[in-house]
Image (cartoon, rainbow, N blue to C red; front, side):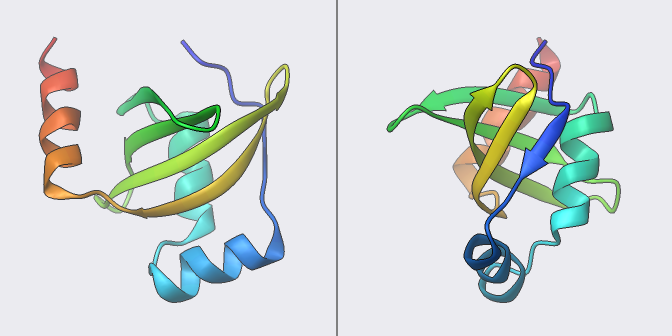
Length: 94
């Protein structure tokens, strides 16, 4: 399992995900660090897409870049698309 010890985010990214996408950073951080309901997919640009369920029941797609060891940078986050929700549900069945 992927280990996330620290999550870094730039101010511009934080403003975008909370303002434009309506996703709270605290929900993402909590789900990435503590939740077992998450699945990972490699995407372009060396990023990792993490599909996760927050403690408030939201379904979020977060995009991360690896910094070192357990440190990751949050590049973006938004609500899951319908296709991502299907992928997430399928990954939980296996």
